[in-house]
Length: 236
Image (cartoon, rainbow, N blue to C red; front, side):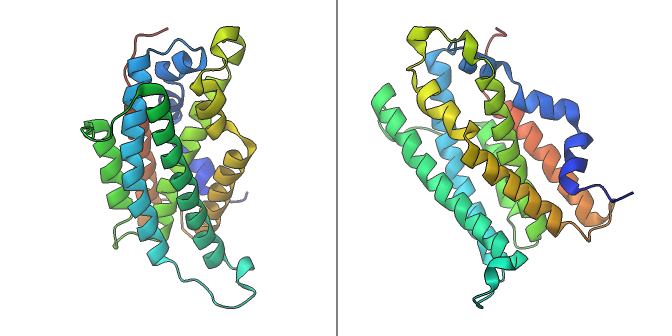
C-alpha cells in the first residue's frame, strides 16, 4: 500500500477540530445574511491585521527557497515552491486592498486604533514560529496549506446556504465579494497547488519522524487558531 500523503494524514488526524474550524456558527450567519454588522466589522478588522503577519511569513519562506536560474526551472520543485509563495503574496496584497475598500465603503472606516485580539495574536505567533529560520520549508508549507485549506472549506460551507439568502440581501458585500473571493475556482486551484507541493516536499519524510510530528503540531495550531478567529455569535 502506498504511503499516506501528508495532506491526507493531516485531514484525518483531527477531523472534529477541522469541522469546528470550518463550520463555525459565524459562517452560517454569514452565509444566510443574518450576521450582525458589528460582527462582520470585527472580523474584517482582525483579518486585515492578520494579513500583516502573513506577509512577513511569506517573505521568510521565500528567503529559504533556492531558486534555479536555468530556463528549465519551471519544472523544478524549488521553483514551483517559490512561485507558490510569490502567488500567495500577490493574492494577499490584493485582499488587503479589498478589505480596506470594503471597510471604507461599507463601514465608514477610519484607519488606526485597531489592536490584535488574542485570537489574531495566536495566528501571528503561529506564522512567526513556522517561518522561523530554524524551521524547514516543509513546516512553513504546512502552515500555509493549513490556513488556506481552512479558509476554502469554511467559505464553501458559508456558500452552501446561498438558497436561504433573501433576494434583497443578495447584493450584500458578503455575497458579492467576500464569499466569492474564497470559493472561486482560482482560489480552490491555488489551495490544491499548495497541497500538491506539500505532499511532494513530504514524500521522503517518514511518518512519525520529528519533521512529520512538527507538521502535525502546526496543523493543530492552525485549527485552534482558525476556530477561535471567527467572532463569537449566538447559534443560529
